[in-house]
Amino acid sequence: MSIASNLSVIRGRIARAANRARRSPNDIVLMAVCKTQPASKILEAYNAGQYLFGENRVQEFAEKFRALANLHAAEFHMIGHLQSNKAAKAVEIFHAVDSVDSARLAHRLNDAAKSLSKTVDVLIEINIGGEGAKSGSAPDSPELEAIFSGAPNWPHLRIRGLMTVPPFTEDPEGARPYFRELRELRERLVTRKAQAVTLDILSMGMSHDFEVAIEEGSTCVRIGTAIFGERMHP
Ligand SMILES: *Cc1c(COP(=O)(O)O)cnc(C)c1O
Image 1 (cartoon, rainbow, N blue to C red):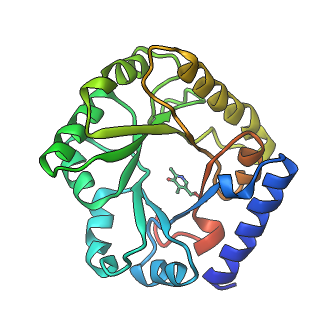
Image 2 (image 1 turned 90 degrees about the vertical axis):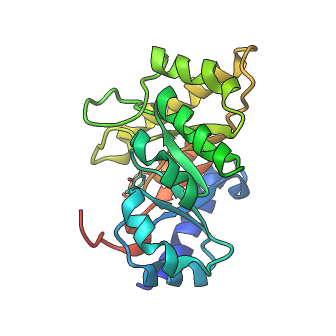
């Protein structure tokens, strides 16, 4: 199957999942996760009308960046773990950072955005399953608290929502309670009156579980292998 036909299959599945959940398919954006994929495949997706992309490593994207510079409608988001010392480079090459997991990183991103006279959209990554090996702030943790209480100090960041990668389960239904938890966490955060944040975006759902994520309120699904096939290297 070509990338174009994979994209159209995925778009159809997104629309059907949205309809089942009585949601508008227009409220869900598809992010094509192109980590490890060569620029030629990204171009193929772009030519099939896919404009939102996710990458998980600063260095890898920095290497592809030039080859993609003429894709004017494309938007690339950083979705992988970001070390504070790469914050400046990330702000330079990405349109948004969807994996902010500490106040320290947010502070660095704000400084970098300020020096480039930019405002950067960010999502806060939540380690919803509390897994040791995964990045993200724990729900209701002091770190998460520090991010939201620090937000007024970072005028160059726009906190747009939450992102999560739940624990892997063979059966996509296994992810449902985690997706629901992220949605509930979002509700708790926005109802706290003091917060000057809206958190419109819930980025959750990948190739094997995105339909369940949509049923639980996802507004952005991040799909890699179901669009591009197996990754080129781990
Ligand atoms: C790789 C990756 C994805 C896409 O995973 P697939 O299973 O290939 O769809 C989504 N989100 C993040 C954060 C990733 O690292």
